Length: 186
Image (tube, rainbow, N blue to C red; front, side, top):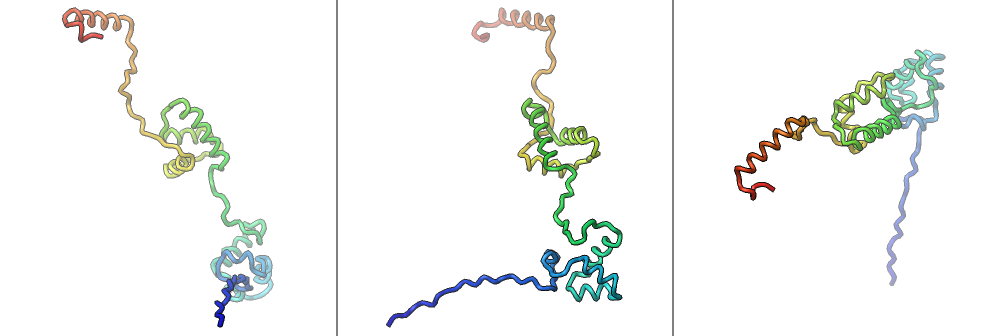
């Protein structure tokens, strides 16, 4: 007697897009269009609540879209512009900013901190009048793998001695050399 294991079938559920839908992201796949709904609102005496229940559209979404439609704020009603960019500085401009910082500051071993980056942005984008925050700068540095340090005073001498000071120093050294043993001078 042979016992066979049952064959396992994998069912892939096909998503059905009904005429009524609740989540906002599914409005793109609905059988109706926004223009059809707005003409229905204008031609019938139905209220927004009745139409939102009829098509299962979120009431606030319908009210917002219809308000924008009435005020001519939307160019094409049926297009969705969700996920658009509201960046003040585009990706290409950010790349140019990074290359400018790299060329003029990093490659030249210059000082770079958040305030300097703010000033660079103001200079490069005068026409846009951009005010960047510390939050934007820290995210910019993360995106482009930059790091900055606080500007600290250096312990390296910044004053170059004059010739007379150098002569005086050499004379003092010679005096001490005569007073001490030669093994302490090299």
